[in-house]
Length: 101
Image 1 (cartoon, rainbow, N blue to C red):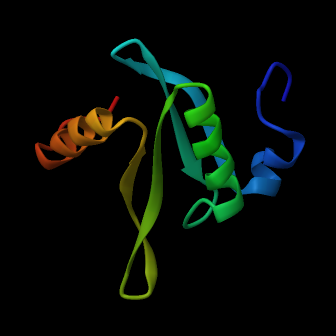
Image 2 (cartoon, one colour):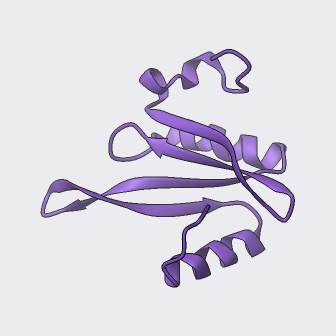
């Protein structure tokens, strides 16, 4: 993880999350995307990502796999972390079926 701000324990094989930094911008703020390796991002990794976003004035989009009838589906739910206005805009985009980035 050369040139990565992630600590060593946040490797995808350990933290069960893949982080894509600077996937887009929102009002000049970098937006990172986190995708779980498995159903969801473990709480320790998600807490670290949220604290990193808050400390460095970034926004975060992350997902979880949706389980239907006890089985993983190929669908994912989107979640948002960041300023209230960012959360509202992303919720509106989701409601309108627009891409988040």
